[in-house]
Image (cartoon, rainbow, N blue to C red):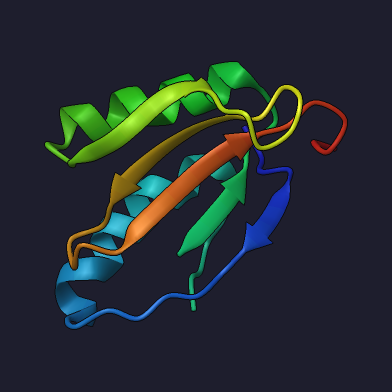
Length: 98
């Protein structure tokens, strides 16, 4: 289930030991093998939903979604917080995913 691309990235963590396993497990299924507000493009709504289910199973705080947002037609995303409380997003926008 490869990612369609990166929408935008700005990521700082307080503990690489704590955060690295989180990001590896979150991003590996999206086709990412390294990480340096993060928004990752997903290939479909199903991928957004699957990652949201994974997040819930990990006990991650979900801010909102997955659902469609008004930002642009078809913008479907889940917003959540990483172990440092940084707000992150996985998004699918029809026509942007490769």
